[in-house]
Image (cartoon, rainbow, N blue to C red; front, top):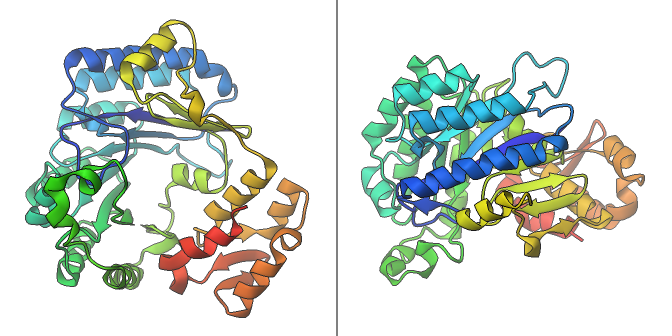
Length: 386
């Protein structure tokens, strides 16, 4: 059963590091065109989830840039069409997440979300330092973070994730430690910590105005120290380090993202959204008018240059790449059942090398990366990609 992701590409201002498809300061007509397009896309793709969907995630962009009325319209349409079914029989509730940025939340929007069963908010905090926030192009202040958390808790939502970034230009260890402490004091159930990467096409990478900021980026050694500090501190505060970038109180691991890491199917709606169903990965056009035009013709708004029929080797590589990012790692029995071949027959030499050095561990039929090597896990995982 697939999960459901809906991309809402609007934001007030493009952050300097953001590589996602987003439209800053969109005109009302463009937002209306987007909403009409998503409504048509839902009708067109309902058949892809005949039994239902297992979770909902509204991401962006900044979904909370939509007005109360627009948010109600979108959520109403989703819930009128899709059936939500727990992935496992032991699940007592459906996970429904909305990404939000401090400064764009208000009680009316939270009331709408609660009406449709939204029970998880992922808040883009990034930093509590006003200078660093402004430097990164964020629109909110440290004070806005506290106000937003208060509104979220008052609404009755009991599952809160805070996003933090380390390695921001000018950030030092003291500031990072303070950010972690302030975040934990807000008692979130979940924390996602991301190392800043300078990606091609972002203002931070391409704009001359940001050249001085690039010179202030912490080096790799400092980023490693920041990551290790966070992992140790959050473990001491009762958070499980269940995926390289993600920490949760027991029972609050993100179910939607976990389905990606398990290699489950997912449906992506909206311009720029990615879907993967039965080994076919597709991406929608990153252009709202073109997205709307294709749907007006009764066609899926796919960017055909990025459409992929994944080969068996690609599916195996991605299963390894995603699974090794998690603390549960790879279930070798499940691997054999899924792909009809023992894992050591494919990766025996590579596994022997890393297991001999205790970088990859084998316990209870599972392969996992030693958490001490999480920050350099990408270089390890790369060897499993065919």
